[in-house]
Image (cartoon, rainbow, N blue to C red):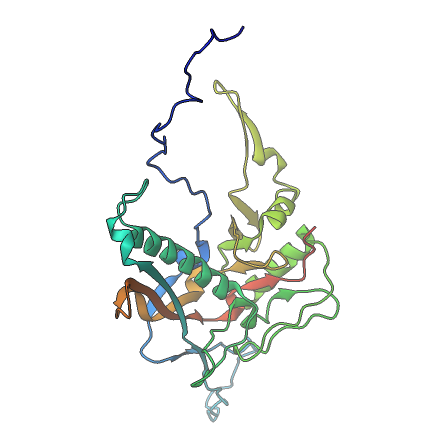
Length: 315
């Protein structure tokens, strides 16, 4: 069909008001499962320290009556520490913006600061998982915290050529040849953690490695089931039960896909020197400035309660 002659339609009209929704849609992931789940403690110095200890191995212990008592040699505690890292982001908005009427937000500054705070939290999560050695810093070098891989060495599995870090945060792991993430590697690491005295309760891993975990045998019947009445097929792996403990698999986005962490959550903490704070900066022109700052570090209370399966293939 065709329009009648001289029809004035919307294509001819001028001054039609825009139709812009007053909602801003953002699906960017903002979850930080590791940072959010561990305990928060207070730091009072840029170098935060703690101590670890261990019992000696069990031994035969029998003595004759009246025997002279001789003291055993005792070992000192192990003193560890990590440097606080400053996470800082800033927003500068021209003051002209205060006179503008915008869709989806009343004030641009408030909207951007909220985004920055979420982004900074993701930066913190990434730093906690990073294979990074601690850096003391100086007047020209930023302090850096040692991430989780720099602390683990007792219960680890890694590829050919790989090597554990010293375990005191002073150096990073050495990456090795990548190999598949398998149930055998996982179970062996879980056993090692148990033998060390650990009670792991969570596994942090990428989406790729999560799909590998979904293929672990012994869980198939539990992962797929039809619920009567709703015709839904549920495929999930909330927990994995082994003789060495029960752990929850937690997919994460901020750790390297090649790294799988088996952790006892109460053996980690974040020590905060300066909690997240949004402050206004001095004006230096026709603009307003605000910054979001957080200063904290990672505490590995006792690395032997945890484990890592490293150098996993990612494709």
